[in-house]
Length: 164
Image (cartoon, rainbow, N blue to C red; front, side, top):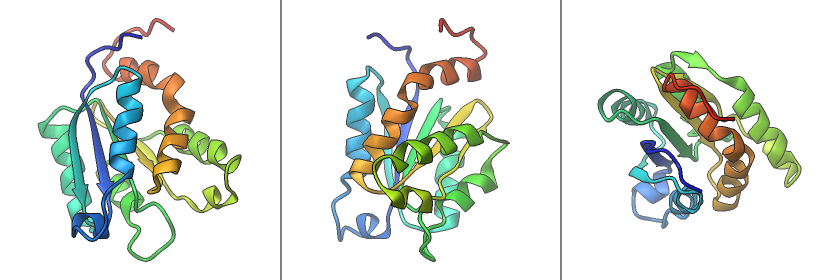
């Protein structure tokens, strides 16, 4: 299936991966899911669980690099250092709650722990930002929930009339 040339970035939020203590498996898994569907990831980053670093990264990708989509993985749980949703909301222009609700609902079929995820989905300008959980399997499961609506959403943000 041919996809439009969307600018997609993947950001892993993990202290351990950022510090080189653990290989990031989630970002590459998410990138692979996107590429298997014909999308191209133009930027991939690993950042620590620091609110200001996450905010700075999201703003850079949205405002300076004109990303159409930023998918984050990690930092969405209930631990004290899990601040990805707060960082995302702090730079958001509009909330898109249906996406995060769908991801949680879809993942509940796999694990009851999905209800503990605090991930959000928002827009900043014409960029869609979606928080996914940090495990590689949860990333793939989350992506499978949004994949059929993704191109439609990105076209709308570009001001285009989607085919579907």
